[in-house]
Amino acid sequence: MSTTTNTNTNTNTNTNTNTNTNTATTTALLQVKDLVREYTLPREHLFRPPGTVQALNGVSFSIAAGRSLGVVGESGSGKSTLARLVMALDAPTAGTVELLGRNLHQLPAEDLRQARRDFQMVFQDPYGSLDPRQTVERIITEPLQAQGQATRAEQREQAGQVLAQVGLRTNDLGKYPHEFSGGQRQRIAIARALITRPRLIVADEPVSALDVSVQAQVLNLMQDLQQQFGITYMLISHDLAVVNHLCDEVVVLYQGRIVERGSPAELFRNAQHPYTQSLVNAVPQVQPGRARARRAAAAAAAAAKIA
Image (cartoon, rainbow, N blue to C red):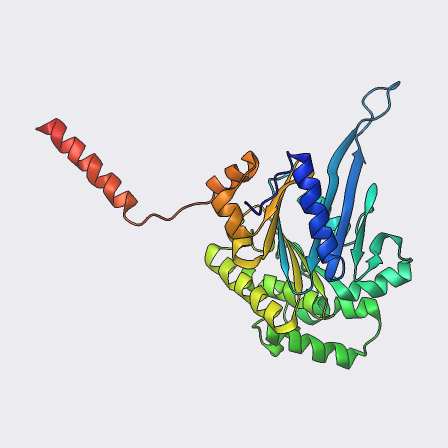
């Protein structure tokens, strides 16, 4: 029996989701339950109420400590909205987000600020997420400054440590973002997320703006940091190959709903939902010798015409 869940069949979806929830309740680091987010559209008619768009509709999942969950889907499927809700940067219309048993959207402002030590975010664009006017030291220590629980000397010491952990040098602390390549900038962004020793890191398309060779370096770095510090990842992506490299489980988001879930290997081998199948088919396949064979066939056809 396939381990993937096709949410077109309501009975199977509810059974599998409830099973996952029950087994993960005691061990889940992050628990998302029935998350809904609606946005009000601009009013188009004076005498009619404004319309609404539902970015998320009943999304539920959990992530165990030290594990990685991939959230894949096309643009507009609700991935970034989900990331913002998990990071408590936006409020849900309905549903809950619990981290370490705390409902993040019901915490008082001061408690939420302190709770942010446990969850950090890595953004998509390493060129836009780092302030070009700030030094690397200032950028990396920003979360510690917001917490206000470390002296300037302690902040600098910790910044040097995390910079070394992501493969950069301590004397890079005095430099500015424009002095680094795209891959190095994303390492700086990861160091900023790492400095509070978070339990959860939400990574929103962390390698999509990088070259393919640099993507592998950054993903390997994230994997090494997970093994070293036991970090839990929620990886947002539209690329199944990236998710396959890092994640233990994948949920497929389509029009604000989870339509399928399972291990990356299972989704690649036995995708059930048509949208998941289209994602799998879109992954480029390297076939050595294919281009050579195509050229040889064309040359043979041309020779036959001449003869």
